[in-house]
Length: 104
Ligand SMILES: [Zn+2]
Image 1: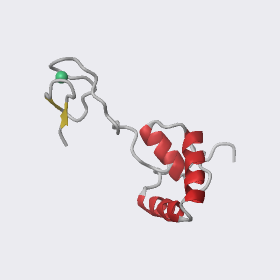
Image 2: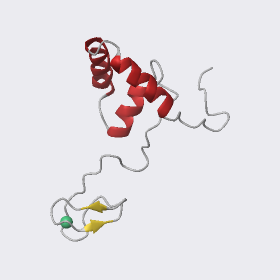
Image 3: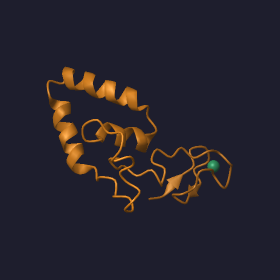
Image 4: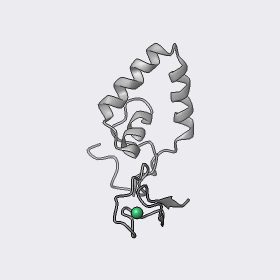
C-alpha cells in the first residue's frame, strides 16, 4: 500500500516517517512494529481494548471507559463488536519458554 505526502503528494514507501521531497512528517495511523494483537499481559477480559490502545496509541483507560459507556448506550451492540474483535484480532504470540509467565 503506497503512502502519499499530505503536503506535496509525493509517493513514499510504506515505512517512511518523513517525506523525502518536502520533509513533512507522514501521519501513519498504523506504524509497523505495533500490529493489532491482543497482548497476553495486562488484559481485563480478552485484551481487545488493550490491543486497540497499543496499536493506535490511545490511552488504555480512555478506551476501556469508552467501551463500557458505549456498551451501555448501544444495548449490547458493542458487546457483539467486542466478541467479533475477540475472534478477529489475533492473540500475541507466545514468548520463548522461560520468559512468560513472570513470577509464577
Ligand atoms: Zn512532501
